[in-house]
Length: 292
Image 1: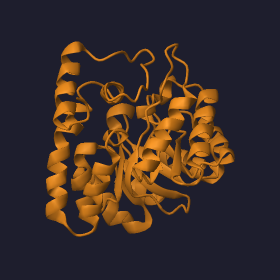
Image 2: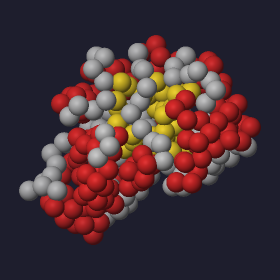
Image 3: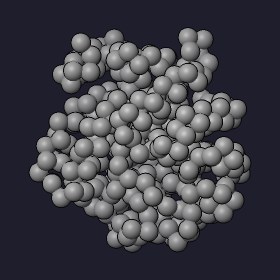
Image 4: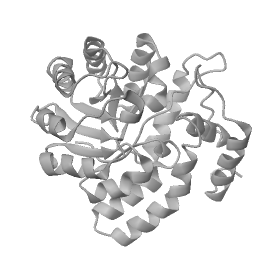
């Protein structure tokens, strides 16, 4: 159902810190021009912990309406309350989203059985296809391959965004689940290795600025041109690294502002990039001719 370079959209703010629907629409248009297959509003890159439910609803509505069926919309509805995720997923379904991205519950550190029940309830009651999001570095819990295998039997659990950083684990997921579950990279610098062990694409930070370049790499690999895919991977590596000079989404929003995309600032506890790291970022962006 999902493949290719899928950006985890940043959330643009006005100068007063409020959500800018105008800029959201502009971002969707940018990705339509670039041929992006799907977008994820209100993911971690979209500062989801700092968005209220009403803001998420407006964000989903704006993206769905602007996309108008021309690309898929995967709404970020995850959290550490199962019932809250269910209710937000129902909202996304009513608005017209195509699927939901559900991050593993953070802070409360459920067991594997708790994780299984969490995702099953959202799949049963939320009404939309579910993309599991495993990111232990942020959540404090790792969704193990055997749990993913159990979940893959549900008709609405269609994909996993894997950001464990373990190629062994990701390979085991593919061995256990095969093509019942689309594996999407959650680490930009590991997208190519993940494709090599059965991945179908990426939900990406860097795709906010160069979705076409990442798509080109993925298409080259899946089309059998591994040599070209490796070359493109190496070309993208410094840009991926720059996107994580500081906590995501600080570098990518800073890059987009430098590029003239005007996505605004951050909500505390996130804050502007340090001067030294911004200089490093600017050097990389110039190398890629993304800024003058």
